[in-house]
Image 1 (cartoon, helix red, strand yellow):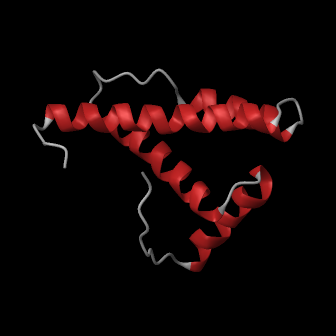
Image 2 (image 1 turned 135 degrees about the horizontal axis):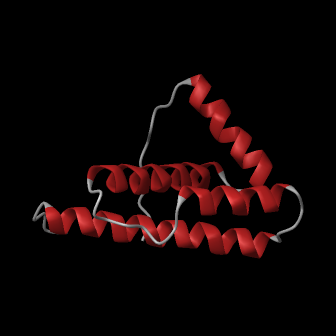
Image 3 (image 1 turned 120 degrees about the vertical axis):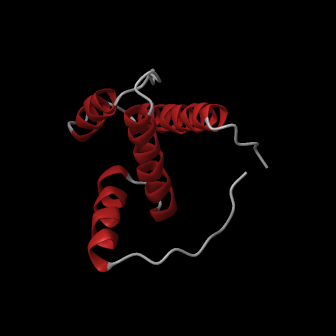
Length: 104
């Protein structure tokens, strides 16, 4: 379930997000979600070295590169994005379990 939040971002970050929107045909909100999920995975993998994500940044960059070269269709990109959302959720659940944080 998605919730609506208002987030203030500086101009330079807006331009970065808009670049991804233009390149990958995503909405502004989806691009922000994607970037947050990637950051979550990277943070938790660094914070908890024993946690191993089954999807790495290298995997993502390889897929994005293929998409940019026209070697991947939008449905394949959607699958990659879904995988990133799933991996971020798993990483967050791992952190919650390690820190004994109950889900609301």
